[in-house]
Amino acid sequence: MRKKEVREQLILGFLGSCALVSMEIFATSMNLWNYFPTNWPVILWPTYFVAILFGYQLLRHVENFF
Image 1: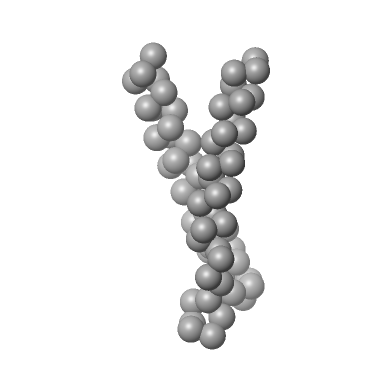
Image 2: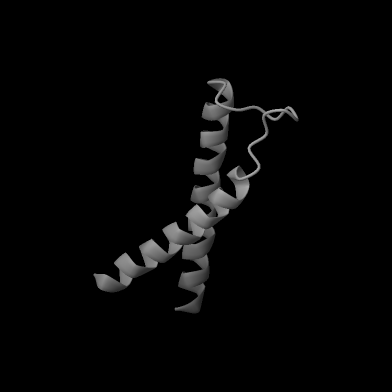
């Protein structure tokens, strides 16, 4: 059971990272922001981190519900 939980967390972390990289590529290619010192969104990465934590808790809740 413990190995299954670790595997689920690793897969979720990998997929979450892929989603974040995709969002970064999209946003920088559309010029929504860039990483020059004048337009670097400081709140971006902490927001990503909190979103992943929320997503994980939401998935755990749904998994336990069903």
